Length: 120
Image 1 (cartoon, rainbow, N blue to C red):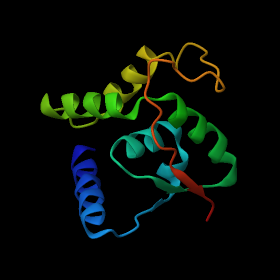
Image 2: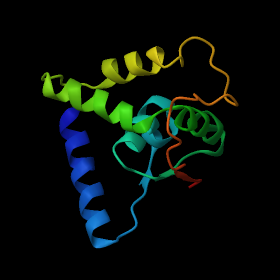
Image 3: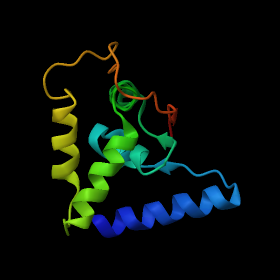
Image 4: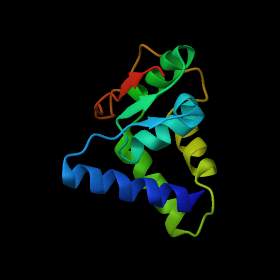
């Protein structure tokens, strides 16, 4: 929901301004699509079940987070109430839906900082 994402963005910005560490803990942090969306919005510490770390970390490393953020912003500017369709379309366009291998990062994507992963 775009209202929740707007809140997350404000919290990320305020914490960055204040130099306050910020982390996100919960089921959404362990779901790859949700986690990559949170990472694109600036969250860098995600807490999740150990079994989720590999898939989430792999997807984030293969994703151009700046370009994904642009896709999210475009969807919001068009009045979308959910950015999920835009995020999944972006991931498919970058090759995530077509068997991209985890150890082969996209060569044209800038390497984003890898978020920290912790387990509860």
